[in-house]
Image (cartoon, rainbow, N blue to C red):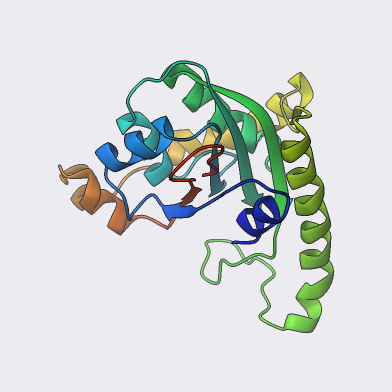
Length: 205
């Protein structure tokens, strides 16, 4: 994972974990052993994907744990990172950093026609811009300079333009609603990521 590599290069010991690869007990242990925790995910309608919501819900409360949140998006999300921070706040996390990264569209089947290409030459510009923003974000985290993109009122309103109708029309499949085990739920829904350092000084999700 590129962000983890950048943090390591700048002296922060970092490890990466998928939320599908660890249970709640392991996650709580990793968080307690770390000074900093990061959460990353793709946005869906300027909202968290369901697996990430379930994962955060299962976490045990913790006292004032520093955190950063980042999300990937195709066009714009408004406040995708702030939304993640709002889910983390009741669990005791303090989000000092938040960022959005524009990435190429990876949806090949959609109700509406979306531009899609797998031509690497056409993706280079988007990926290069994302890389520049990623390096700047890592530098801010390492320097301890709080930075929270999309946490302002205007971004919140832009996020609501997508999130409110998305939540109204979003319906889980029947087989998912009947599923009782969260581990199975996470295998049904798209992959989300977290990074964590198994020992101090820092952890990134």
